[in-house]
Length: 311
Image (tube, rainbow, N blue to C red; front, side, top):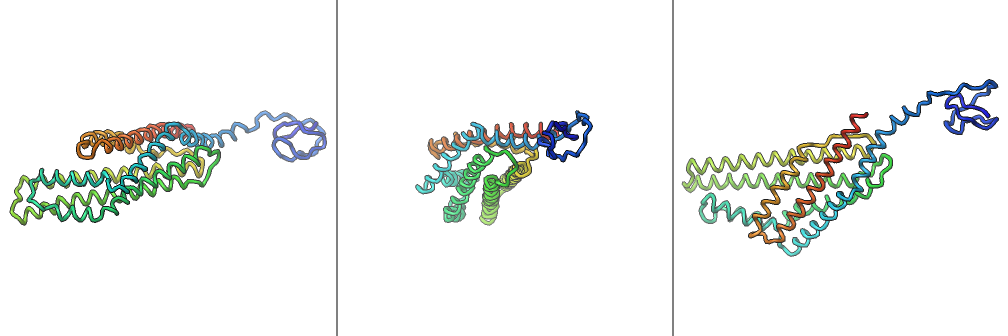
């Protein structure tokens, strides 16, 4: 038997290449001293972080919590598409309710907001598409990610699912920016109309400025939130492509997910008299989906941080 000078493996007489490590075995008659410091541990240290990071992705994408969230999200998208076909989008009911509330709260002259609301409803089809398109893209992206990442064993460029979700988030951010700017425009135009009609007093002006300031704050919160989601998606894409652990998971996004879930649930409950019970059910399902995904995100963040500390 011939021992390999590198790993110490015993090979058949006359063997020129080691069957274990693949190194060339030089001709020698003397016994080869057994090598005890074979660097298997170093190789494992180099390979384990990537293997573990991909294992976290695989376990997360195949978890029952994530699959339940995808299933519930699918039901919500189907309902919203059906609502669009039936021309009963909850969004339009909310717009009408908000218009009545503004007119009653601000005590505006009759017809001040009719022109603005008419313009909003004339673009109803575009608004409906802007609402549903991100939802459809997000569902397709989640489904694609679940299929690709739940079986991942080595770095892969198959990140199309995460890319679809990222596109959906960008569209959603643009939509919310438009809504926020539109609300600020409504307050600004209403203030200017009251000024022209002689109804504007210091108290009303202060109220208008406060509401416009609040709208601006909400816009900034939403923009930072969407940018945080995009950062998370880019982090997951980097892990899928390279196998390296990436813990760039925004705590702000996690906090906002829980905060917005509670807010949406409470508001939808209070809006039952205006949007009927199905509106509350859809909002409750959306809240549950957000909570499930956020719990999974917390687990993923914890696992990735652990891997980054070991690296």
